[in-house]
Length: 218
Image (cartoon, rainbow, N blue to C red):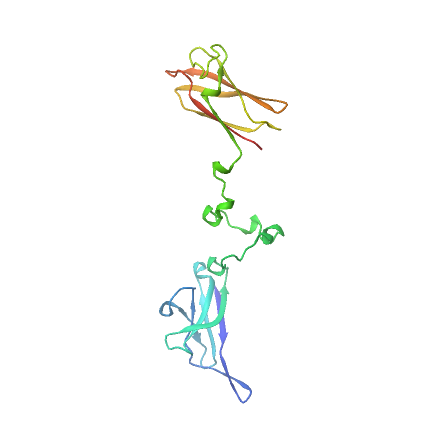
């Protein structure tokens, strides 16, 4: 349980006198006066308080009262009760330096709390923005037929030589698109040239081979 309290005073002859009878409510940003969370005055003390019992009601609130407007108006004060929720985070409030200096760390962010919608387009990495090389069966050479594409009936191996130069062996993904068991059996790096060997396994009714190779450098 959380408790929030606020005192209202008026000045009389230099003295602070409790201001009683004020209608004080807590509103979420954008909420209306009618649905605000009312605070209860303790007798006629000018002290108003409320209790939060549910965790989902915790977070950021604006303090409203009826002093200037019978229908309620923002007092200029805000409060956070319990844990800070998303309403308390204003646009552009987190900058790169908060992450770089360790203030915002992975341990402070709840699991699955950050999605793609929180990232600007410049931080999202679709395939079109990655460095990669894509080849298909037309770039592979069969070991027996020496044809491109290779034959799933006559060839045992298919050899691909990547066009780009690599310092280390890239991450290679084989996407099979035919009714034949194909798998990568070897990836060799000689200098800056990468050679990929695909083995032709059990074949059902595929001929010629059909697949794609995706190479992503580290």
